[in-house]
Amino acid sequence: MATATGSTTEPEANNLSRDLVDWICETANGTVVSADRRPGGGRREAWVVEVRGADGTIRPLFLRYDRLDPEEKGDDFTLHREAAFFRALSGTAVPVPNIVGVHPTEQATLSELVPGQPWFSRLHDEDQRVSVASDFIRILAEMHRVDPHRLGLPDQDPDADLRVLVHREIDAWEKVYRDSGTSDPLIDLGLDWVRRHVPDVDGPVAIVQGDTGPGNFLFENGKVTAVLDLELGHLGDPHDDLAWVSVRAVQEPFTNLLERFDDYARAAGTTIDLDRIRYYRVLAELRIVILGHRKRAEPDLLGEVGNGLVYGLLHRRLFLEALADVEGVEVTEVDPVPSTPGERDWLYDAALEQIRQIIVPRSEDPFVIQRSKGLARILKYLREASSVSAAVEQQDLDALESVLEYRPSSVSAGTVKLVKRCLEGTVPLGTTVGVLLRQVAGETQALRPAMGVLADRHFDPLGR
Image 1 (cartoon, rainbow, N blue to C red):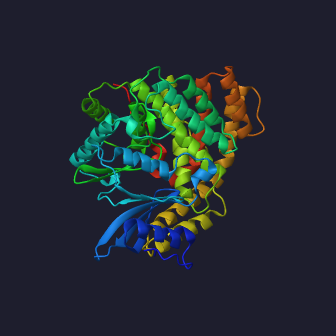
Image 2: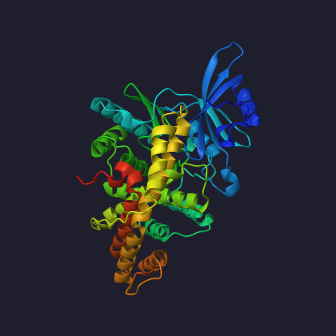
Image 3: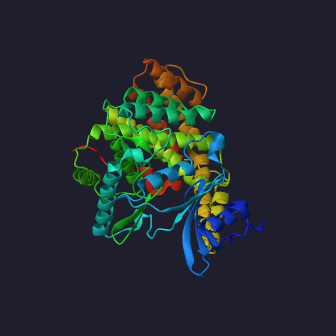
């Protein structure tokens, strides 16, 4: 368990500063007796903090903390902003953690610790799974009923036309992309598509969680105890959240998705437009790809690099599959390239075995165990990439040459040219998506040992 004393004997990422501990003490009106960093959360650290009150009672609290102040980087998705969504939903039919305090300068929020677990995939009893999933969908419908005027954020206008709000959301994400200072033809393609296909409806406008679904709520005894992770919240179309459920269900299968959408329709007293879900599924995946692009532009060497590799590639593929689905483009299987074993493979194997048989079994800290497994994913990728990368590159160059009618100097240069021609209208979107999916298939072959079952996960079908 990491102490909260600010001791310099521990790595900075596993410690809380004395100033932050003092703020917790003042905010919670007690003394911090322990602070335990929990796995997950990415850049936004998750800590369970125990505070002893004047009467000796121990009060468990939950701290969210971002050491890299996003406001300094022009990032709108701050913990301060997230707290506004929690407060807007407080006292409604949507269970959310009670905010105890928001740090006045640092990106840190303190809330009551809510009972429950987030890992829907650990539920194996089907009745329990359906009970939790149905309860969450009911709560999602309740969230969309909450008066959007309760939010009160200056950049979110509850009286705006829905189409205007969607375009503003796209603008916000394009800014995140442009601020990275680097380009990605896949994102350029996606931004052009989502702008041209915004659904032509003016409402209703609702508080939308963003990134909603399994993994971002807590549950216990067959019921949801809290909705979490509102940093991507905004005002928009309820179908946006339903699309996010579809996206997160790839990572953690979420019972029968169409049955859950029927649950939503009954709870909300409305009908669901599956084509709008298809649109917002593309937009949701584009957001994830943009976040991954920003991480690559500004890599955090102490972050969850292994997970970032896996989920970054998974969502690049899912973005293309979502685009193919809405455009009616057939997705074809790509045969794997031959693998060429290397003379240094045994070194990767030795490192992996030592992580598996020595480091992980002898570690008691869940955070250390998680990061050790992340390092193993990196090693698995490097081992396989050294065996297949050359053949994958030739396959990608062949595919680009067949469309561009010349052999590009590199895959990256050819991809930029391909997307440019697509945006100009000289190469069909379906052809472009097909070539890009072939590239992702090659990347998946290299990353497959690290991806496990995610290498073969796809969206649940939306057809009736």
